Amino acid sequence: MSELKPSLMDYTLKELESLISPKFRVKQIYGWLYHHYASVYEDMKNIPKALKEELDEKYLVNPLSIKNKEESTDGTIKYLLELQDGKTMEAVWLKMKDEQLDESGNICQEAKYTICVSTQVGCKVGCTFCLTAKGGFTRDLSAGEIVAQVVTLKKDNNHKHSRKINIVYMGMGEPLDNLTNLAKAIEIFKEDEGLSIGGKRQTVSTSGLSSKIDKLGEMDLGVHIAISLHAVDDELRSELIPMNKAHNIQSIMDAVKRFPIDTRKRVMFEYLVIKGKNDDIASAKKLVKLLADIKAKVNLIYFNPYPGTPYHRPSKASMLSFQEYLVKHGLLCTIRDSKGIDISAACGQLKEKVEVEGEGEA
Ligand code: SAH
Ligand code: SF4
Image 1: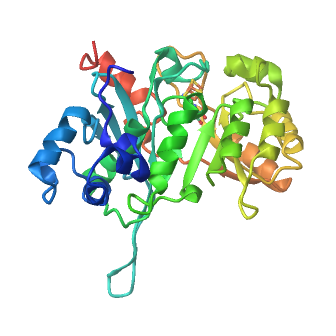
Image 2: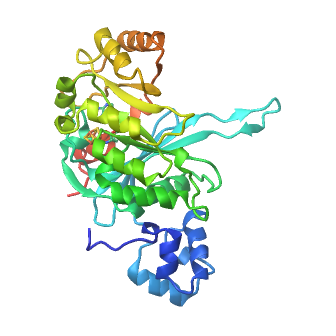
Image 3: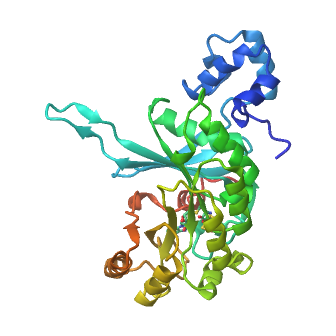
């Protein structure tokens, strides 16, 4: 990582103010980065040429370029993004709610979007159901490479900086395994002079590194967490997520209870449903028990098959009866609608496709 050139997006406003003089230029530069989505120095019209040349020697503007893009009929757009060292990772633009029109056909409420970002190229956790895991771990993303995903996708979709957006850290990689850069990115997103995306609009999804959940909590960044639970007993969970042996279900539950959560909010538990593995009512029953004293909501996810996987997608009927059981027993439970199902939706699947088709990195 050290040989890579940092980008302006790697720094908070305060840090840039200590790196760049005169200081008053930094707010202007921040505006170019986060309000006008400048990709190169030439875009920054009111910054003196000499300063731009000086900065150009040390910092990139936007460290990402769009390598591939797949658009689904439901408005989901999956991006394959290339980093300066030629490595690739994914980010997804998700349309969560259509725009609302009033009686005369004018827009009275704009559409709502969420961006799913990656935190690493590859992943060390090695979940047996996950395509990202199959490629192993390449490297952490820098804070700027995380931030640039949101800038790049907002720019590509003409989404003004002032329009609200939610961020979920659910792309490639385990966010808590790259905690320093993750925390920095969260801070940069929150900057009032920048994108101004508050902590409550950011959700960190983790496979359950319990000690790091505590660390994230201590940082008090105001973000939500989502726990990728996927199983209700340690035996199956360790089969699906090998590091469960070191961070078992109980340790995760304890960490969640210590996490500073907005009292009006719930902790999201993601439960990947795999046919014949964890889709039975006995599992649903155990799940209710496990979450009994946590303000939780459950998101059921259909396992999304890919070539070579030993696992299968559950039937709609078993999904619905699993959900029905949870709801009947007082748990808030949604089924993640398969956004972008026609475009290799789950994490790691676009990257894999491009590489198989021979356009991928060497
Ligand atoms: N590493 C973090 C965040 C990224 S994984 C975590 O595990 O939480 C993002 C999501 O993709 C997780 O909820 C994971 O369960 C899901 N996922 C991975 N492989 C999948 C597949 N084959 N089908 C459906 N969802 C999958
Ligand atoms: Fe890593 Fe998440 Fe995939 Fe597991 S599901 S291998 S933690 S990206």
